[in-house]
Image (tube, rainbow, N blue to C red):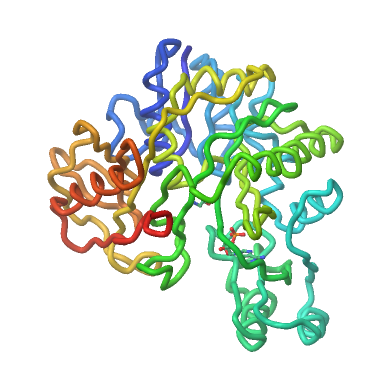
Length: 421
Ligand code: AMP
Ligand code: GLY
């Protein structure tokens, strides 16, 4: 099977690592990849691939006769890459109409309300005056969200109404998020513990992986600004069988049935971001792709052929059984450039990072090769992952290895997984 993997973050490096192990694989190409990928696996610039111009992808996939295209990031899915490749090649990822679950928070809310999926109450606005009037009747804390894709930065959790007003003005008046913020949601704040459940979906059935927990704030103790994710672990102790049954019935099954009823059966990966309180989960958000960095930990303990599952999902024929997950725990800590998620330096030299050292595996995110040197290119630079018989062991392995990272100008959280211990 000849496969093209699109994307170039830690998530895609982890997917690349896992797909590479498939006995069904004959060739795996990636674009744009990063410094952690084998250089000969990366599609060369001469091929003219441009993820913001879908016809370049369609032409390349047709000419190269791929058997499957795996789409890592959300933007090409929201832009309709699965639709563009219909009839050309099977795609792991939902069609455009279904990708609105992530592309538009207003659509997503409406979808959840129509199909009885538990979530926070919310109202949508496009004008400042009625939004402020509505806000005046609410009590804090309250959540203000930009409707469109905003690289994870469009959500403001506001402790008081003054900051909520500022968040509304940022989006509807000051244009801080561009067109993504011209529609806003004012949403009920949900208290509780967050967890992410990923499910692989074939249009009819959604089969969950193990729940994981991300750490979105930049600094220890959940302080500092929101990021794309600074570390993750699994399994999550407060997610038991009863909770997973509720998530399956009220979230995953209803989402699958809803998408079928709406005429766009969901194929690919569905990410349910959940808030859990008193043993019940409500949806914070849906994403239409694997989460990062959770996927880096998840791939380490998935005990079956990911490529085969992806192909079955794309073909509408997932097996009727739970996924095989190795016993034990997995943990990832993200190493980021100082300053992230604000402005940060690039081209920091990284040394002493081999991508496979026994139990530790480095998944690269923002790196590139320059001859023999490895340099940083992104805010999230790489993820350090380990597995172990339990979380204590996996955590110790990662943090022991991190003490020997040879790089200046980077930081990482020291408390990933602490909440679970
Ligand atoms: P999102 O981009 O929708 O995942 O939001 C980013 C983060 O904001 C989430 O991971 C939550 O921590 C927080 N958040 C979003 N919506 C809510 C809500 N309704 N109640 C509480 N926290 C929320
Ligand atoms: N880890 C959060 C995300 O991928 O959206």
